[in-house]
Length: 97
Image (tube, rainbow, N blue to C red):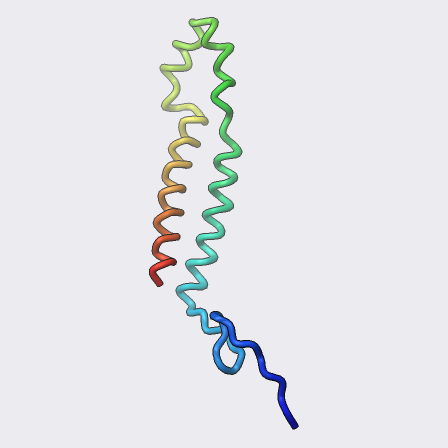
């Protein structure tokens, strides 16, 4: 009896089994999770045009400038920077494997 041949791709071996290593699989899962988390963090940030009405008033602008380091938007901006750096580094490491 003739067995049908399985098309061999870059991810399968000669018997049709997956040849992706465990570290590559784990890094791929972490990379996808980091990408989704990065999208969520960027979408949670408020737009820069939200502060335009406060800039006209002047008094509210100086009060917000004092507390900018403690605000939610500043924390999200800092988190975005670190998650983006981690995502890029992780993606480069995956390309080298």
